[in-house]
Image 1 (cartoon, one colour):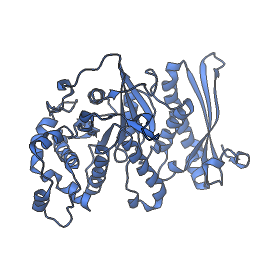
Image 2: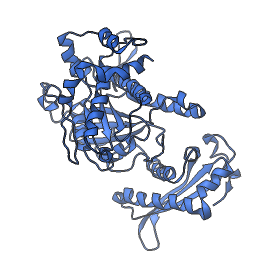
Image 3: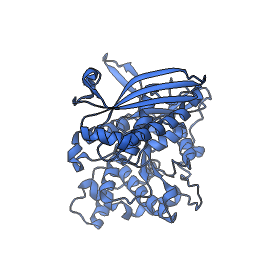
Image 4: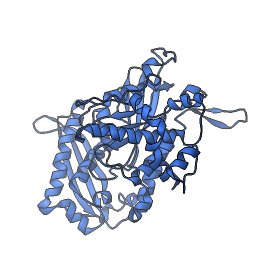
Length: 433
């Protein structure tokens, strides 16, 4: 309730109006971008420029409500499919690591499940609790957090409460573990990315990314949304645990923590910037990447080689592509109940001499009704999943010399309720396609 009062009152705080002028540069064209105030513009930084050979890194957690376009943003950044993209909620279930390397700087992105409050979804409480915990853990170990929102959707009070939780978690994140050392007591001690650098701890820790701006008309609506959500972000930065329950608007403002002029200047450095992007159309993403690169801190080693975009194995990338098509072609709880079991992955040549990748995968379901839905009438649904996935896989692996993909998907039924038993139970699984 305290957070709800906090989120509902932010737009009424008088100190936010002038901040919008510094945060945004309205451009009524296709391209939208953020403009930071001069005190937060990385080009005006007084910090010394690091040597060109010094490696720098920034671990970034991508969080936000379901279906905001987080996975699409990750795929656009890496120019390939590393995360399943679907209109369905909670397509992403586990954090996926991807990188963007530019000169001596590497950005490490962690895609997280759509943040939900599992108390609102009792039927899937366990699943959603895991999604929430995963999002929070990713943020705590990240140097920076991108809170991605669908700019075309209305921000309801319930979502504002969840955004306040995300913003507070991002603002108080500890950062990545850069190293481990032994302290004077002989105990292992984590060395965090920011170390004892005051500038690091007094800078912004999260940004607000308004995605799908191409769907918003008129564009003036984006400024209103940015002012509203930006004010919420500013208030979360200023929040010091004040209790607002039972107070009217006037009391909330009067009882808010008072800061000195020096403290206000330090707080201004921590206010989140607002970015306008369309991840699907790759509009505004480059500006976001440049800002993230400016925040990177020194590191000993990159997480991945500069020419490698993701830590996912070949098999995991194939699973992501197929899973995306499963979510696009099936509805309700069916996609969530399918387990993917790989049977064969082999590179060879076709009769015509083309270099091909053969993939055999089982789509395992636990009920006969789901089995029929995945197959579709006359096997049409399964063929659609198979063909659309095959086309994407050809595009993804063409740079590796693959000219064709032979994809064989089979729907199987099992009574086993646990994924770990699927391999052991294959002898009793009934082949249905």
